[in-house]
Length: 332
Ligand code: MN
Image (cartoon, rainbow, N blue to C red; front, side, top):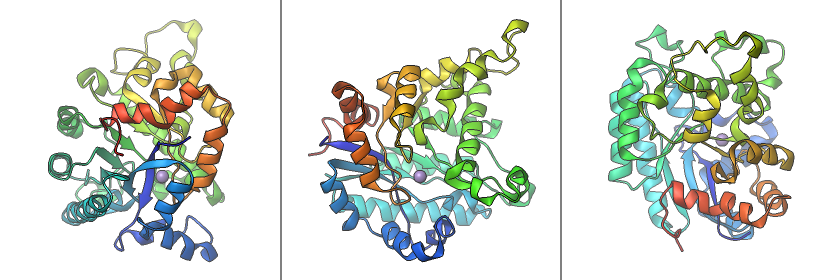
């Protein structure tokens, strides 16, 4: 399929490059490093070869979220967003941008999102899970965005009317004891999905979407497992018939169907895609690759021939993203 729009497409700047070391064997690092720093050569060539018209670019992980020094986090987000704006300006027909945000400081994050959207023309934000702040728990307290101090930030996201992509990171060591002795379960194998799914469920349960029903949250990797678990999160011990014990008014499935969008990043499996279509409908699923951690060809060759209708392929591959990110007819 030509004209695809891809949504979870990462790059690095020298200051964040090392955050991605360790996710591949040492003998693959040089390749990953080159892929992360490249925007206009190999990346664009692969986009051309595989029918991807536009990539929405975002910084690698965890980057800004893992800098406990607030001033440094604020500065790095600004630098990364300025670099990205310049790169996108070189090929506005092929690239768009998600803002990196210093959520250690909710007010600074609101201001940076406002600047990125209104001054730099960014189409939303991509944030790498919880933030660390040296002023809270010595930086060892994972700050999730359902916490009360983030309601002002969410009000700004809703006002700006841009989607918020909640991207994974690994849990902090003290919260990762379940993986002890099994480091291969961290990262994309399992830890990323567990971390991000719980964060998304916290946002829902907290009542955030009752207060800000206009929010659009995007999660990758075919929904981080949530579509397959929606029945269970809403119906545990169903025979008891007790009301749920979280602040949100409705069931998880209602918010997931109205405030969430999922992407195909790094999860190129027709069975999982069809399950997501059955749970959410094809209007809320969006194409993404997760380059350079996954391959563009693996994503695109699979998606282009997946056993779904061509009407759904067109929606997921392009038109849903054109609508959500207000790309007009899409850059040409
Ligand atoms: Mn990713």
